[in-house]
Image (cartoon, rainbow, N blue to C red; front, side, top):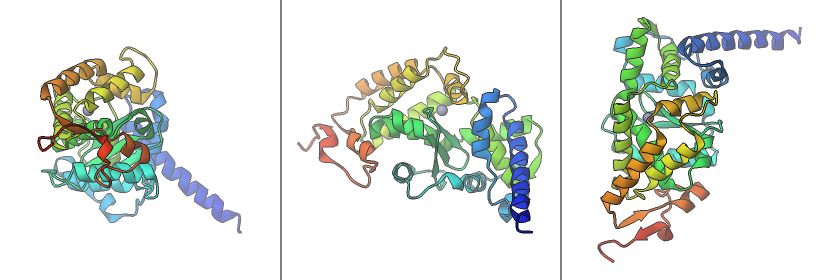
Length: 297
Ligand SMILES: [Zn+2]
């Protein structure tokens, strides 16, 4: 008798896993097969008993904040509160999004993936890979990427894309939890327009200036991405696919180097030590990380 319980639980688990893979394959059917592990990783259904997730909603009536909460619920398993990376990026996102005019509660999840990447989902849910945290060398660079993703949310790009794609796919009404999975699948596909990307870049750059971070942080981050993801390289990695869809990182690096030069900021914060120690500048500001002279000096 005792052996039956684990077998039974195993069956339930397998069933749940299969159904989630099916749902996600539907969302990611245009993706190469190499994307499958990523989708499985992201799609582990959790808390499916949560009443909010089983409520069936017509796509055009989905509230963005509510959808964000549903997505966050699904990926809560990736949030390890004791993880220094998690605490660090969370502190940054909390402060950078404090003026969110959309009024979303921003959440961020660190995905164990070596490819440097970040993405945003409706309602202020951000995903950052461990590879991105390895790639950047200063907090300024990281903030430029976070600013870009927050920009996609604040400018309404994420919810517009999800609604558009679901309606195009003739998905009329689904349980909220399923819409959340589909939304994440859509967000991982290369799909923003060049204009939207340019607007998100501008948003991220303005954030660097407003927060007195190194204005060259954005150009430096793009430069590193360009070195790691040559635009014409076929790697079969879905995260590389994502970056290829963005305007060339080399061009963006060049553009934002010029913007930073023209901004002629006299004093700015680098945050190399903050990144190294995983302590956000909002929690500890190190005087040696300031460069240049202020008006008062
Ligand atoms: Zn983008």
